[in-house]
Structures are given as C-alpha cells and as structure tokens.
Length: 366
Image (tube, rainbow, N blue to C red; front, top):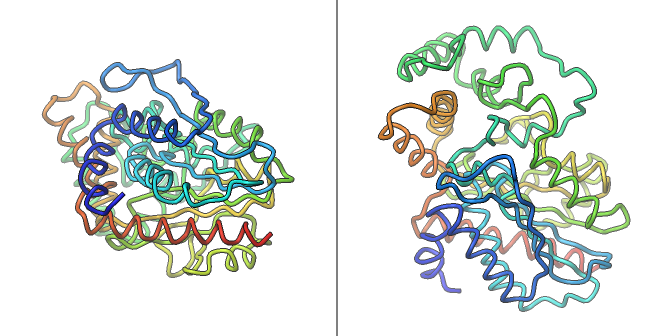
C-alpha cells in the first residue's frame, strides 16, 4: 500500500467510525488467512446502536514458540490510529514473513465502546490502562490526590457548566503549575468514577477479554514481544518508545529495539507519566518474560490534549447535553488522537514498520 493510499482511503475509513474501521480490519485479516475470534460486549451498544466487538486475529501456528502481539484501542478513540497500523502491517509486512514457528496476534479495539463513542474511556468512564490492579486489595488514595480533586474538579460533574469547570482547572494550574496538574490528573485514581483517569472498582469487560487472550495465546513458555498502539502524548508525529515490561528485561528490550531509545514512564525526559494498573500487567501476570512496549505517537500539545479530555469527561457525565455540543466535543476528541494529514500518517507508519521489524528480527535470532 502506498503512502497516498495510507493518507487517502485508509486514513478516511479508519477514522470515520468504529464500524468502518472494524470492517476494514476484518476484511484484511480474512484476506491473509487469519483465524479470528470475536468477543462481543453484550452490556452496551455503539453510538449508532451497533454491536460492539473486540476482534482477535491470529496468523501462524498457535503452537509457535515465538509471537508478536499487537494491540489497539486500549483507549477507545486511539484505536483509529492503531487499527490503521495493524491493517498496514497485514498488507505490507506479513506477506514477507516466514511464519514457521512464529505467530502474529492482532487485538483490535480492546475498548470498542470508547472507539464507537469517540471517547478514551469505556462506558463506565474507566481508563482501561489503569484497570489492571489487584481489586481484592484496597486501592490507596493519598491526601494529595483527594485535595487535588477538591481544588481542581467540581463536587459533582453532572449538570455543571463546562466553562466553569474549565475555569476552575485554569485557576488550579495558575496556582500550582501545569506539571503538577498533569501528574495528579493522569496517574490513575480509584475513588471518583466521575473524574478523569478513573481506574474502576473492579476488572471491566475489556480487562477480562485481554486476560482471556493472554491465557490462551501468550503462555509463559512463549518468547513474546508486545506492541501496544497509543496516541496523544509527545511532539506531533514523534514516537516515544515506552518500555512497560519487567525491569529485569530492560537490557533485552534495548537489544531488541535497536532503532530507537527505550524510555520508562515517569522518566525525566518522558512524555508519559508513571501510572497505576497499565495493560501490560495483565500480560505479565501470564508471561513475566514478555517484552512489553507502548508506541506513543504525538498529536497535539499536552495542554490541549488534557483540556480535550476534561471536555470529554464532562460529556460522559452530561450525556443529555445539546446535540451540537456533543458533536463538537466528540469531533475535538477524535482530532486530538488521530491526525488524518499525510505527513503525520507517514511518520506514524514509518516508526510502526521500523519497530515491528526490530521485534521480528530479534525473534528470528532466537
């Protein structure tokens, strides 16, 4: 597929809606001979009343000792980029690969509700990348986090005026600084379901799907590399290669991804803060030696991105708002996490191809 096609039909289709992106993914997966499992979320429907699925396409033998796992849509609206990259890998790279003792697993739109409704979170306002904690244990909430909530957010989001919410946050930033606001907003919290970055009170549907996929196909005896697609943080078009696996395998991961520089969440020069309950925890519970990496592609400045998430959070808590306002926020959210312009798409594909091939070459040496 040429760059013209990436920024043309594929770019338009993959950002149009959940159903369009899913249809393209399934058609492509079927065309190359994938075995596909469909996980239906029976609890909710999409924005147009459509059924919502996480689809898992597998190519190569289930008994393979080497596997590459590619996941998209952990944050629903970020699936539009991840879906496009998964399709391009199928069309451009898979035909060149010897699949003897190698399997490639594509997990498509792990959070289909967020993808369909143009939201980062799921139907319960849960950030899936904060949901992989041990809920049998009480989740600690610091006094600092509670004070932040009291100072930055409304007591009750429902029925609030959006502009007043934004003004309240602006005052907090003016008093305490943007860096502190970002850190406390994004680290994950487990006590206020109305607020952004809520990790949930229990394992959500997507968590259970991911756990099932990992247990079935990512056993501890498998030499596995996991690439998880994300957008929204960092300079426009840049890719931050974020290592989220076990600390004891950092050196092995660095030797795998020789084309870039691995960085840990929360590091001094990282765009990604240290967080609680990320997706990799679900995989590492099954395969502790898996190399887990998030590909984080930059879109818009961090201040604008966080502001967009505040508006999206307000919309979740005020679903009966004016239809024009709903569409404005949904469009703004999509544009914050997927840029359909050719230069951005080319950069994202270039880095995706580079790091996928790094993973493949490393596995081929074993």
